[in-house]
Image (cartoon, rainbow, N blue to C red):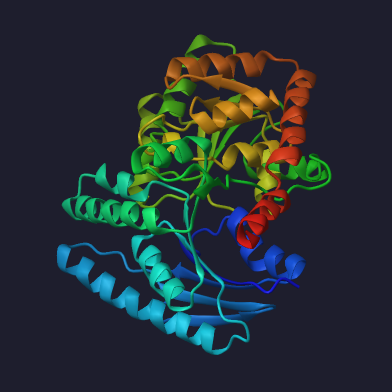
Length: 408
């Protein structure tokens, strides 16, 4: 057993999403396979007080998610969240036999600062994981409150990154960004990209494919293009609807359907996409479904024919490591992906899909090509994606990398 005790401060709202590439290492692999005590602090917007859950080798502390809508509310957010963090960590440490050896904080500036303080108190290693350029995204929003949070968050994050013992980032592009802009040492910055849990074969959902095609309204002759993920307007998903309009207007693609499955931060986000489809006279060609369970998601994806990964190459998303492309590969689906560094790497190395520029015209051309491609060619492409995934982005392999960094 490793004499390690890692406290993770994870910033996502787990009542909405808790991606497997974070959840499985923290709550399963590290405790069960490596004997490492792991405690996790995370947000949950469905609660109003800190709650605790005892697990096999550690605790999970759920903190209320506070969403400030005004400048005074930002102050209240800071004060209450600091208090909740202290409550959670105090209980975790009180019930631990081994004192913490590592504090790993994700994204959220208050988590980063709290982890730094607690790590210093216990002479523990302090690690920061940046999975998303959150302050930069807030700075792009129209709200003055968001801009204030983004400006303050970026100053705090960049200052703390310089003092961290290690920095884990999502992509090679993000690693280069922080090394060049902040002067971080190359040995200090590690790449922990998105990953997925992989089954022994890609076709484990095949016996249920027709069932899930019916759930999606796909007829026997239908050809499904699928997008999974966030439906926020920040993602500019209208590019897919516009591409679908170009495809349908060409003629000969009457059986094509564009399917969205995902979480919309607000009702307006879904309404916007539906209205865009209506204006393009695509009511019969576009369908939007809410998020589905993680267990069922592969079957919904497998029910379709081609996966879509439109990530705008902007100053925030260009540094991401999209998991959706890996979810498509997991079930052997070929992919059409926009050109950002991580997707360029995945597609060029795997040959599991095609890359396109950020325009409806390029997506439409690629969709038409995939539609006309013989089914066995699409299967070959999807199989190449699956094989690459097994070798490079399987969660257990990524977890082994993490353990080596912790031990060093």
